[in-house]
Length: 355
Image (cartoon, rainbow, N blue to C red):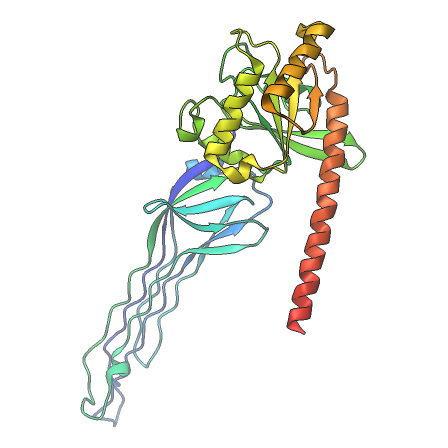
């Protein structure tokens, strides 16, 4: 099944129930007073994080979601039944936008988290509410207010620990095939990968990480060129970026120039994303002899003024991929420990503030 990462839906909250005009009608009481009840409130619409859902695929089939409206009031001061709230499950990592004004409403980051996206209508008032010393028999009631309606754009960012970055045909799909059980399509033409692919890389017992094969990025991608800006969004939640560079491009271009294209697009899209930890991975080393390989490696490092980690691999022959996977796992475990320490410190600070 292909990965569906964006969906547009319409949500409609329930209308408030109408109040009623009613008067007491009882035996031996000739002048009964007003007893019209209020209507019920309309149900609201919520999006709820659900860790059992992985994609937005279901939203391709059902596009409109409507909460229950409140019922009208009744005599004897009886209030109408309120409409049931509607809860729509979405995957963890879903961003919620108001599609009409392109405003971020919420970000689902944990299981069970609820975000109200449409407010139910307020109930109408019965004539009992309008009784006063100068109006003992009011014949006035009000309708309930309509429920809020919204067009929402949902975006699911790939929840992966590691994202693969690179031009088309850099060897990203081949790399993910070599280190995981994922089987993305591999071919010798650009844009072989049309949808993000996820693979689980198992390094040892209880040691694994998720890697995302992002479709190739070309010059102008941050402005929507090629497969567009949508795939750059997937990289936002990864902890580590692997910049895959083709050491022997079939078009004869310079690997360093290709790398600069990616770096510029990354920085144009998001400066924050460009600051994420990034490792250089020089792929297709099997196509060069040792002297050519060392020369290319030194040229790339020099032209990029690179000071971070550099790995030389051949994804197709799996040469160097095991060491890279082990080093990634080691780095992710270190990052996770630091996150736990930071969370613990924050919790301790909150406890101290409460005390």
